[in-house]
Image 1 (cartoon, helix red, strand yellow):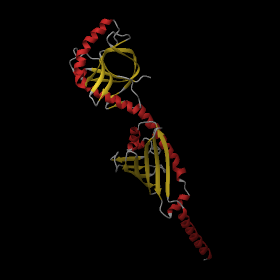
Image 2 (tube, rainbow, N blue to C red; image 1 turned 60 degrees about the horizontal axis):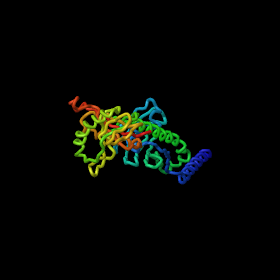
Image 3 (cartoon, rainbow, N blue to C red; image 1 turned 135 degrees about the vertical axis):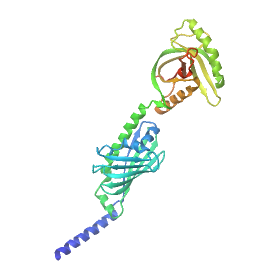
Length: 337
């Protein structure tokens, strides 16, 4: 009996000690890691606002080759990711997008294995001068008296390395994807090296409504004059835009012909060389606006600055090809470098 009393007292003492420890033990765990990504914020958001995007940089998704998962209603609040793995650290559970903002994405985690628990994952996106700062955080709450277990486990040491691996993967994947993006508005934008050339022609400020008449009345006599000058022509008639005024619906434009070098009295000239963003547009001339918009989005995405002019080269002669869907217009934005 004495032994039983000693055992009983010991157990009670341990329980009391456990309860006392729980009074001072932390109830909340907070683990986070931060990274700065050199990519457009849109590219970052694409990888954090959906489960398909998140899985690309999840440090746990590829850990278990036998992992099974499914996704419902991805990319919106209420979307759910279910997973079940054989790896003890991967376990089983679900993750639900509970808040989907431009700067903060919150998901609720419900773990079934290795033990049942709940937590929150918060991804914060902040634009800075150095790049897009992303903080990936984990928060959970352990009720009393189970919170005493928090003194036995250092969650930052346990989860911190995985969170660091995750944000580093997010950075490398996003920067690589952003650098490789060359299609905008379903239009491919290329970078080409423009051989040195000089555009000679007639420069004027005209309204948008006057453009068709201006080119129609200028190109034919201009091309004949340049041909007669003896200068070596290296391309087709082109529109060289110096300014595009949306408010006044006007443009400063040259109806020009590209030559290897030289000038002609009475005509304006502008020299172009180096790298250029290029789009091949097939179709009527009025459809070239999509090519310009695609290049503009490319420059915004990649942080590229255009040079002094934008150029449309009318490669196809409409008098020889009557089907306007086959007309090729090459749109150039010289960027130098």
